[in-house]
Length: 123
Image (cartoon, rainbow, N blue to C red; front, side):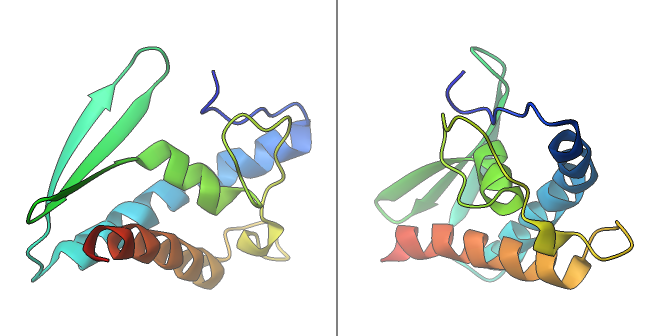
């Protein structure tokens, strides 16, 4: 499935497991912040086939944009993630020296990617 990351290294798998839930939560939180006091409307849709997707449909006036939130998570979690690439590398800046989530880095990166999505809609 072209949108899913290919993880073959056990360490990368462990790092991704650590990060994916916090990344998803931070993305949703940044979306919420962008939608507050905004004329942009959002609708969510879960799609299970051919692979799980959680889509967000944004509308601003006559402009529409659909984003796969899992794909956005992969872009935050992995370095230079592109759908279908042969392998992925976890952004280790998102993990602190103790092996926990580096929350400040995660917050900043998630905000950057979500802000880019909203900028594309209102550009």
